[in-house]
Length: 241
Ligand SMILES: [Zn+2]
Image 1 (cartoon, rainbow, N blue to C red):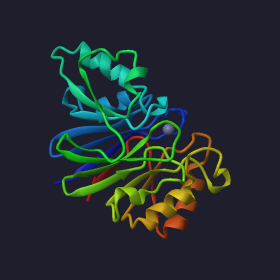
Image 2: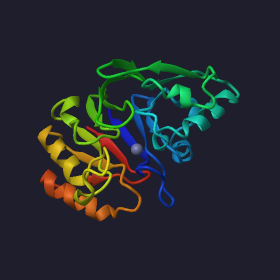
Image 3: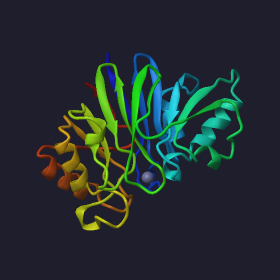
Image 4: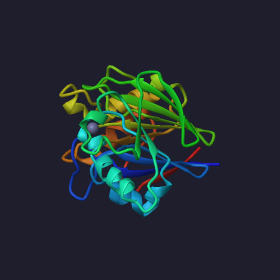
């Protein structure tokens, strides 16, 4: 069995030219789970899997670059020929921001720090990060592989909170070491340092600010990690373990 990750969007803050906000599809054993659904992700998603085959969505926090396309998903599900309900796992406050929050197709499940949930055949555990509104990183165990997603965070949280020796750390690296401290986000250097300290087997950096050159973030992250890191691009697919 394989846990497959497909990057639907990976731009930090807002979609850059031709890009999309944060969104990742996880597939294991015939199940389909979304981690975040930022602006532009819904269109790419439908090229990979039909919407009627989705089994759940995790929204890590209320910032629009991680949840905006949930509105479009609600519309698609509500008017589908065979409407169906799917669980939306999110911290407190996300539901209230939704325009289509009353529609029953979205089955809201409020989650918080340290919660453990099984959904779409995968086991999830949440960890509150260092970010403005309540933001939940998530450990996903599925198909014999472990993936840790940092969501958005500053350096006051660590990947180690999701466990040691992750098969893949999917970690935000919004900018470079030059911008450290501007807001609660990580540089490539900081993301790589925390992945190395947590013994992550591989590191996929994501959530780069659209105006920051990809090569600079990847170079400083690889130097700090001690070996090459992967940089997220739209459509990138990774099979684990
Ligand atoms: Zn963000």
